Length: 178
Image (cartoon, rainbow, N blue to C red; front, top):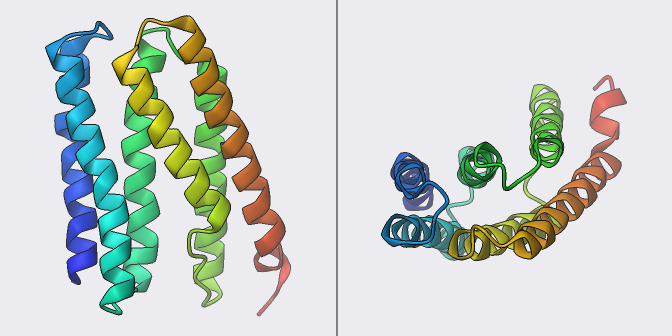
């Protein structure tokens, strides 16, 4: 396993700690939410670091192309599930995010079955970065409805846009018999 993939695994390992702090914080500003934010930021930074290392050290691998976006999904969805549980994020918005993630993952699985790997695209990276920033802001200000509305809007719009783009760019994977 490459160093880049090990760093991605660290991001995955942060998720239970993050969720524990979020649960203890119960969506109320205070120590637990600040600890949640710290863990979330550290985990998010590993996304940048593992990508830089993979490219700089020529450690880009199919495993990394699979694991990196999966780690991002798990981290961001963990936060969104907590906000949804607290009634701060509408369930329909979470469902849009989950539908996009399952659909893109399914597309990637079909592509792998045909010997192709679909790496994260630019719009997917923008979606991930904007989602992570929104979730950080939301963790700091969990009870402010305006922030919840803006964050939900940004997350849904970037999620839908990137999902549509993945399917447009990789539509042939679904229909090619090769």
